[in-house]
Image (cartoon, rainbow, N blue to C red; front, side, top):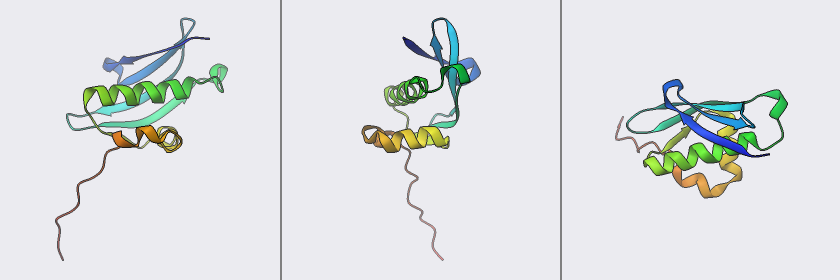
Length: 101
């Protein structure tokens, strides 16, 4: 089973396709400063077949290629990064505050 993942910028998501059928998507918000992954969904017929991992890996690799940090609000993407520590470097780190009391 070959999983193809491609960006669908007009619909703001990465789509996973298996044998010509959309198997899932990773929804994002892209700003000039970062990419926020908000939701990942794998359709029931494709669960447990690596579709979610393919979406996460491709989305994170693309963010790295674009030079944009990732804010993983999506629990799946966040958990996937936690299990694949080689992607921790793409995670957005908020700048330290300069606020004082």
